[in-house]
Length: 94
Image (cartoon, rainbow, N blue to C red; front, side):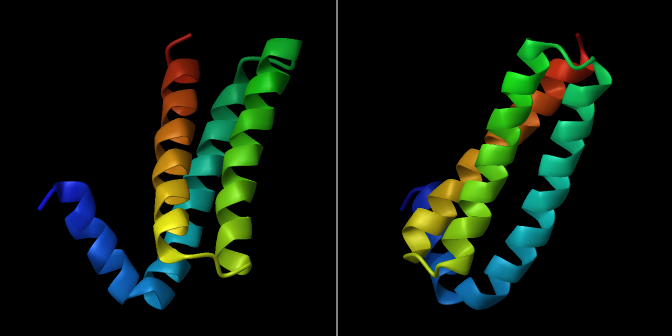
């Protein structure tokens, strides 16, 4: 069984608790990414990056609020955390 599959099964079993925790953690990471993007200015390039940060956060939060299937929510969580972390890291070193 792969690492992804094992974590997906655990997430599915405790999705109510994990959703609450994931919304808080993912929103904090998204806020950090937005802050890092805006620290580099407000040029069109930063605004495009900020759009993707907000879209990733809103997509995950919307999936949780609309009670989508746990696999979709888990995949959106991974996409959001990885994407926002990359935006934060990229802007930290520019």
